[in-house]
Length: 173
Image (cartoon, rainbow, N blue to C red; front, side, top):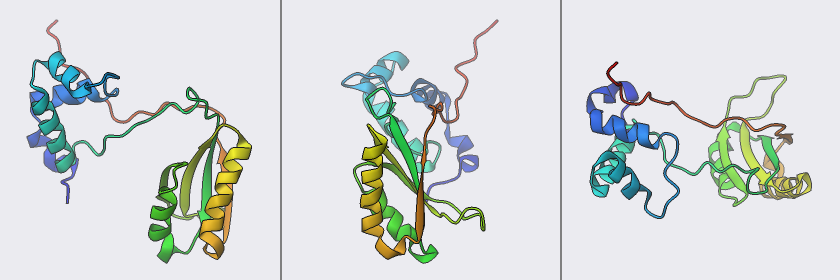
């Protein structure tokens, strides 16, 4: 089980911090991104990879993943499908729904009754709302009667997707 960030403060040294700062805006879009980071920081690529793996293992870095700009690649209809499924099945159903190739992320959230009965959220991307609607129908068909109700909330604008950002190295004034 990973440590919490509060428990890992002592394991982040200056080199780890430099790696975090160098990668927090995204990996370089080159064939060997870890080599590029290593060159920038005057390290060996294996050191960058080992340190990042350790930072993941102890929980300083929560995940590495692709964050595409869906609009830039032609997916302009983005819908958060929300589902009311039995609480005792939400984890199992969520894992299955998250496995659909058109679902970018899927997670459980608490209900806020009586206004909000939904506890399973699955983000679906398509080039048109019709495409998204067909994909949501596929999820509905899969869930069957376990989906007591659902809705789709379409994006109206792009939100900046970033996590925590560390300041770069301090410079002498």
